Amino acid sequence: MGCSMFRIGVGLNSGEAASPDKVYNKIVNCEDVGYMSLSTSDKCLKWYNSPLTPIEANLSCQSNVGNLFRITSSDMFQEILNITTIIDPTYTVFTIDGNDIAQEGTWVFSDGSAFDTNLLASDQPNGGTLENCLVVVSGGLIHDGPCDPYSFQYICERYLVL
Ligand SMILES: [Ca+2]
Image 1 (cartoon, rainbow, N blue to C red):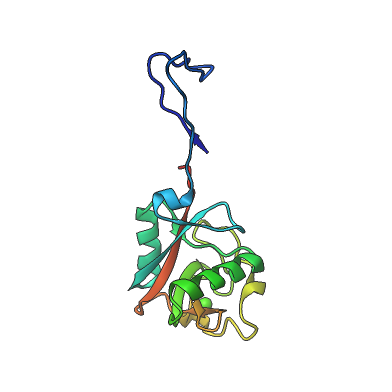
Image 2 (cartoon, rainbow, N blue to C red):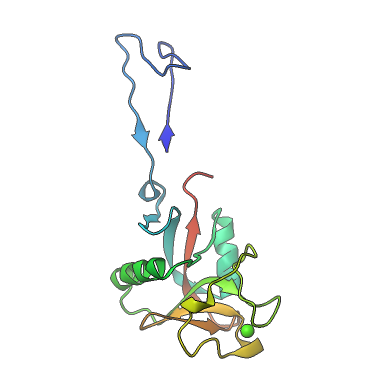
């Protein structure tokens, strides 16, 4: 994404400067807005250390113009596990987007789109109506977990360009 600032002497349509002015282009990336880039996603990510319940965590992400991190492929899952191991190697549980609140057993992201349940650990989900949110547990496995009252670390995502 490019961002331009013009002043007198720079053509608004051409972007060309009349001498002696010069035109500089700045490329904005996730790191510029305090987030991380992923090679497997076009969204920007941020790890939050202060634990919240999954429901509170999603509200927190929304207040930062995003949502909880949506894992949509095994490659993306592996990449975030590699990053998480560097950020907080001692993590035990962190929250990601996905729930079956509206219909037990039907897992969707917070925008209503489908979560691929093939990404779950092989013995999951196992919590029935007591566990309607998604978490990643240490060892790198996606489980269903309680939406409240327990608090976990979490990851938000947002688009770079809003
Ligand atoms: Ca459930």
